[in-house]
Image 1 (cartoon, rainbow, N blue to C red):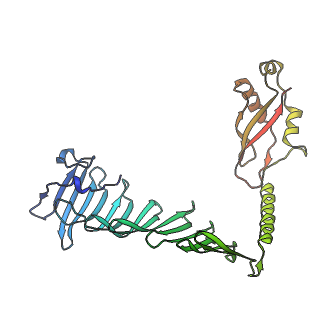
Image 2: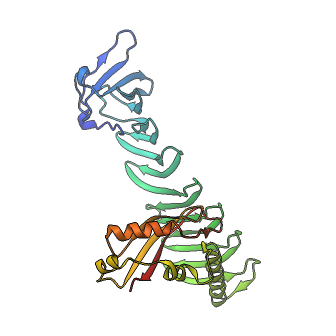
Image 3: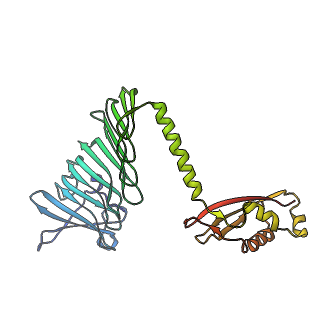
Length: 327
């Protein structure tokens, strides 16, 4: 929960401590002033040379939810540096106010635990002039940075892969500018020129810097894709019993009792869905075509005798679908 002071709600009285000159404000959970016994939040105000510094706290947890400067004890005018925190006490945003309007750069966090900045926004008299947005991979590596300057019509972006290598970048003003694409090693792969949002030229390069045609690039990418597909195929689990594979093994060994086959008279085939664990054994079995409990029990018992798969180093694989004839 982020505590936000709204000027229209904060025409509040204060209790002044004669010993410390500290102002105290009590608030209900709905944000309104209330007697102390009904309060969910307590705010302390300490006058200094910059105004009145307010720190707001959740009474139950004791955690700070906000701190900032106001010009008056009624807390109607924000002037100065502010910080906002969530219910766990993690910082969500920081920035300056001037006469109740955001001013200058504000910083925002969404991945609070890892302290990853999500946005930096430049304000002038409360209007957002420029924004920088950041995205991250699950390992906290920066994946992209995008800048949009609405006032000056400037756009910039950069994108990285999970290893931290640059993938592409670009910069435009009034939709006129340049975009660069890179090889995994960081070498320039393509330079695109834009004017008024349209591509005016494209130049392609080999990793050694030599020029190359767009057709050669496409052939190069197609070869790389085919190699990647081959690599993925080598990483798939391999059924270890016989060259004819799993379907042949089932057709040779799996039999339905005649009584059960009669119950499934409307089915010609059944589709068994399962996954493999790190030991190459099936789990999460289901029969996609039928809700017959007896059939599922039979399939589950049968799978207990299924030979182990060679997992090729995989920790888990699936789901796998196997369609077999029952007629």
